[in-house]
Image (tube, rainbow, N blue to C red):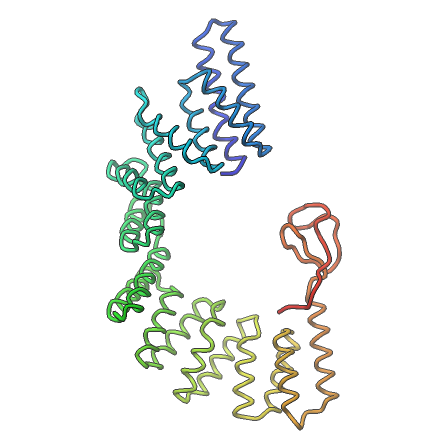
Length: 390
């Protein structure tokens, strides 16, 4: 939780504390107490905003000692203890709140939820599961409790229960959970695949697609299943679908996909797919793959011409290294032309690479700025050292 969030959490506490103090004492003495408690609260808030958590805890402990009925102070202390990693203290505090008589149902429920969060932080997942399950069964704070239960089942790798409660959360709050459910089914599919139960693996892949029709991971699992059974045609379809759903995964699927094309003798399809990817993917991987096909099928000269043209548009260190290697293998290549091409590619790399970078936020710039345009910090932009990367 951010410091600003803590401020909004604790500000009403200060007001409520002052109001209670005003009611309990005489007018003059109560007014003094209001002022004293309010000042103490704001001093604690100031420590929080300045990330002085030790001093903030000390202040709030003083307030709790003065006014033991201020439940919000106890909640604030519990959050601070957990945030600092003092989970044992948070657990004891929230256990005392759960056991305290006279709390409203809403306060008791909040205390149970906070105690469950403490147990999760301490790794006591079975205790946390019990508390959150009780909250869900009672129908109070169900969305929050369900989210925590899903986290518990993920930590325990109980994917079936994680799926069950993700569906409950979707029904309870209307929050789409399809992408998460698809991931859980993919976990089950991977486990089944490794156990050799390909039928179950396929069933879970189908369930993953049902939850998220564009699931990249389901496509990857499906492709591996097809490869395991020697079905290159189906594997090609799955790999191609992965790249079209999320082109950033192209490097992950390119090698096995090209192997499938080669085994089936589908060079034309491979060329068409790579040309399609080159139009949309900014990296050099599909360019290098297509260059190798051109070299194998049409010769080094055609491959060099294609690669040099592409590298002028998308300069790359990997591409430059491939161009040098191909030029050295081509006995007919003109060294002067090769050097001129390399010079052009290198110049493009230098022009496109930031000469300066912010050490705080990573903002890249061609010229130096004393104040970072990204995060507005001063003196954080420094020159970039090292080789130009892709």
